Length: 321
Image (cartoon, rainbow, N blue to C red; front, side, top):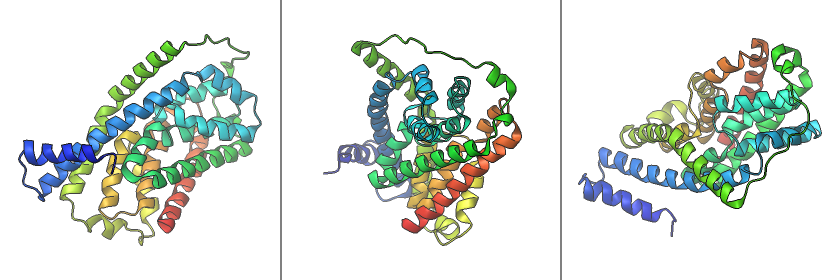
């Protein structure tokens, strides 16, 4: 039996019993979708974020910086990308850690691997993709995101563009090891509980808006409308989705429910996931913040490399799926 079946039963009771909406109508479909996905996503988020928070309690920023500073640069790219899974989930909140890495002497290419991975492939994205699309799509997305992050960091590192980072960033460099107090088991559990609640407080509006828009698309948009313009047979669909996603700003919690609804209406999986990657990893607010610490040329290089990786991934997903 589907583990989410009890939630579906509740959504059916709420929609058809409590609200007394006529089944098989556009409104019923939209409301049922909204209730089911909202409950499922919040349950998954609570469980996974709590578990990841326990892991994170063993890896404070100072320890992460120390680890990355003493590794081979290619290993550093891999580790930095993997660390993106258990670090802040939106690009703007990842930037302070990005600066901390540079100031601690972590190679620039390694820090860019982290900056790409953190908003794109984190526990929130993993949970939502797993709940809405299943483990195969979630795994493919995570692996492709890791590859983009690793290769982007390696390429930027090879370009030797440290001179394009504002000088004041390096002037605030720190050296030496920092003695970190260890946490007890009770403290870790308390930290994980507080962090989980804090994340849920921050993302619940994004989740509700994303699911709400997705529910409207699910219930009211004709099944073939989007497929006509953004199906897998349209060569321009993937790059157009990436370009549309850049000016938008959201985190995975807000955009994935929308992605789910788009795929149900016939938009190809590669196109929708490329859109999601673009929104989370190449947001305009992120560029505006980065402009304060690096020159525009470096931002263009960063966006170009990551953008090409996302477009390639979108086309690849369309072919495979």
